Amino acid sequence: MNFKYKAILSIATLFAMAFTQPGVTLKIKGSDTVLPLSQKEAESFMKKNPTSKITVIGGGSGVGIAAFLDGTTDIAMSSRKMKMSEKMKLQDAGKAFKEVTIAYDALSVIVNPNNKVSQLTREQLEGIFTGKITNWKEVGGNDEKIVAYSRESSSGTYEFFKEHVLSNKNYGTSILMMPATGAIVQSVSQTKGAIGYIGFAYMEKTVKALKVSYDKGKTYVEPTVANSKNKSYPIVRPLYYYYLIKDAAKVKPFLDYVLSGEGQKVVSDVGYINLN
Image 1 (tube, rainbow, N blue to C red):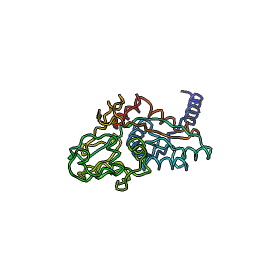
Image 2: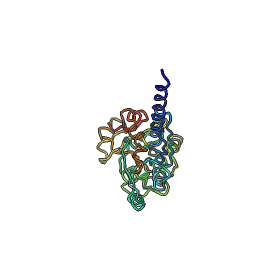
Image 3: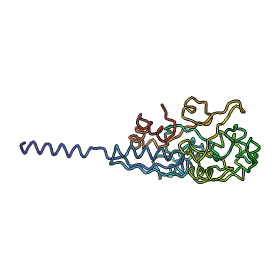
Image 4: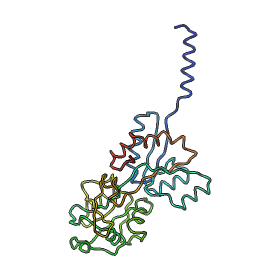
């Protein structure tokens, strides 16, 4: 190979290197429900793109959206839709944003495995979590005090449960508010009279999922992927990513991956319901 040809090759190589896309660097923050999914998606994406760095932090949908509002995260993970007040803050700041549904979740009501109750109506759940029903014998169980666990108010799961299960009624004052979904699973598994609600991916053998009725007890349906897909399970919700339109090019490679066949397989592997 002559010197002139080598020189041309070297220039071409340098030119190509200069225009090679750098790795994606992203911060993702928010929903504890979406957390295990985003962690797995980021892990898989970074394996395929070793120069990328994606940081994923939980804390709740409200925490993620607050970080999104003050510009300290690129993507907010949320298990609820953005509130009008949050949208107005973005609008006032001149920040146009995009909402993307990345998966679905069957919100599961769980009890201690020793509890003989295996099904409840929406009305009974409302009674329990508003504090009107306080003993398991009132819903066909043993004479035992109900210990109800909920997520904190910064959680999208808290908001969704309040809206879709409690018909927007307030939680009872005796309800124990927990900082994370994992804490609810642990508490319910260790407390005989306990009840709580969690994202489907957090289900473990240490707790029991209840069948739920939304037709006043005519039909009770358990939370499964199949029942969520055929829409027979009544408490299914979308899981969201929010990002600023000005950051579209920055988030696109990761977002495209999450929405791809491979990314949606990760959704199923983690235990949520994919978009397909």
